Structures are given as C-alpha cells and as structure tokens.
Image (tube, rainbow, N blue to C red; front, side):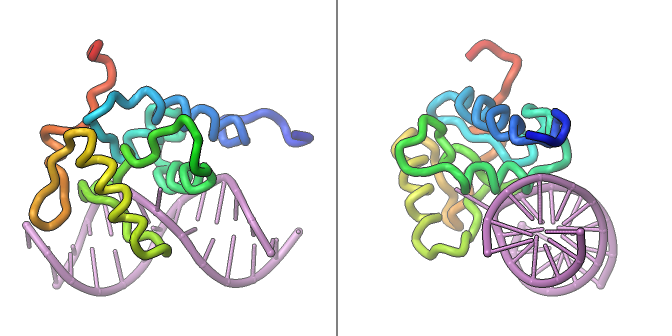
Amino acid sequence: MSRSTRASGAGAYARIYAVVRRIPRGRVATYGQVAELAGLDGHARQVGYALHALRAGSAVPWHRVINAAGMVSPRAVPGAELTQRQLLEREGVGFDLRGRVRLSVVRWKPRESS
DNA sequence: TTTATGGCTGTCA
DNA sequence: ATGACAGCCATAA
C-alpha cells in the first residue's frame, strides 16, 4: 500500500467480509445495506466485486447478500444465481414465485441483538 | 498511465 | 407493479 490508507483501500474488503459474516442464518442483506454498514456508503457495487473476489471455502456467506430488488443478481455465470437461491432456501429463506425473497421478512436488521 | 467492465441503485415511462 | 436508462466508482488488464 504505497498509497495512503483510506476508507476505499484494500481494507474495505475486510470490512465488507466482516459485515457479511455478521449476517445471521436465514436472513439476507442487500448490497447497498452491506456497503453502508461497511462504511462504503453508496458503493453497493464495490460490495458485489468484493464478494465476487471470494472463493469457495471462504467463511463469508456471500449467498446471503442480494440486490435491492430482493433477488439474486443474474451474474455472468449462468446457474450461479440458482446456487445462491438454493443456499438461501436451505437456510429457511422463502422465495417468491418470481424468485424474489420477501425483504420485509428476511431483511437482516443490524442493531438488534439477534 | 488509461480504458473497459461490472454480482448495483434510483428514477422515469 | 414491471421494464428501461444513466450514473458512480473501484478492480483488472
């Protein structure tokens, strides 16, 4: 890091992972929400990239992070969204007929002690 | 260094 | 309610 340490540095990733890791099972959070909690308020996209950088085996439940529409993003890799959906369903997250979750119900609420 | 792309979001029709 | 467009910004090449 020759460049000075700033909020938008590589440390941002660790912060994002920390937030995602805090998401309890059976609950989901939107990219924008995670970004805000990670201090990257407004940089929802950055969260998506950080999660994309993760690899299988990471302790980060990336599948619990979805977009503001309440559904998994149609990533470049076909089938991946189905995998995320299955993981969520396995945790008790109910999906809509259109493949959307009820954010009003499964939306993770930080602050409150689970 | 610049260029191109992207796991989004919010607004308008 | 859904569908389409533009904007923002960091990462990777």
